[in-house]
Structure formats: C-alpha cells, structure tokens
Length: 209
Image 1 (spheres, rainbow, N blue to C red):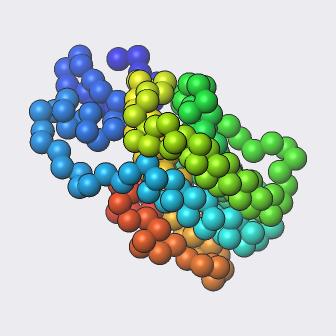
Image 2 (image 1 turned 90 degrees about the horizontal axis):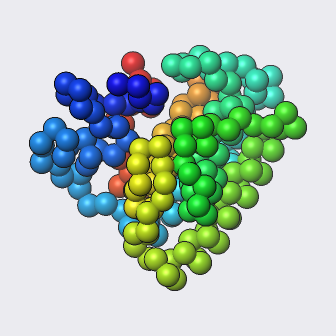
C-alpha cells in the first residue's frame, strides 16, 4: 500500500487510516455511535487538565530515572521523552491551527539537549497549557465549533477532530506516566480523576498488550 503510518484498516487494495473511528466505521459499512462528542471548549478543558496533571507528575520523576528507558513500551522511549511527547502533542496541534501541517513527525519532535531536568518538562507543560487557553479564547470568538479544516497526515480534517485526537493522545500518555510513577513507588501528586478524562475516546488499557 505504501502507507508509512499506523493504524490502517485495509480491505483488498483499499484502505483507510485508522486515526478517526468514524472514518473506519464508514469504510467498513458499519453504524457507529461513539456517544456524544465533547465540544471544542470541553476538549480544551480536558487537554489543559491533562497538561496540568502532567506538570505535577513530571516534577516527581526521579532524576536517576529521567533518561532511563520505560519498562513497558512498544518503542525505545525514556521517561524524559514520554513526558516531553505528551506536551509536544498539544503544541503540534497549536501549530496545525496556525497553518503548519500536522505530519507524523510533528508531535514526536524530541526534547532539546538543553532539557535535562524534570522541572523543565513541568514548565513546558504549564507554558503550553497557558498557550492553549489563550489560543482558544481567541479562536472561539470566530469558530466556536472548530469547524475549519486543517491539514493532517490523515487528510484534511475539521479542527475539532484534531483537537479530540490530540486531547486523548496526551491523556493516554499522562495515564502512562502516572502508572509508571506508581511502579517506581512514587505517590503521585493529584492523580487523574474520572472527570479529567470523561468523554475522551481512550483505550481501556493504559498499555497495549
């Protein structure tokens, strides 16, 4: 097929990227009812709440573990890279809203060599959360439904679709960071609550089998 991203749902020589569940259901001829979608304002609330949780969790990463590889991951990724990535996802969404294509590479830009301390990730999370709030305060005045389209590696999408995808993606990695801290014997400061994640299409499991 020549497709360099996953997941992909294929049938014969036809396929659809599996980034948007509704697209997959349509491709397979299935009726899909994913429940009521969150509004863009609610998605911003969820994303900012997740970033604030990540901010709390990041400073609790033991320094001697910061550059160690995660014990559970399908790829070689460190605690430092995981914590940075979950914030970078939201920054990439903001860039897409400003006209930069949301490519496969955009949300996985690695942390710079100058990021050597967990507190720097926490500061980054707080900064991006503030930027997200300020952006939505402006954006909502002209496009409260986030209906304008943005360019992504899974096609032109309504901004609201990208916002949802990025919100749950950051949330899933924040769940993972919380879980990992628990494995290290760290009692996290302000665990994620059900209301922090309500309405996001998250997988049941924190980690894939």
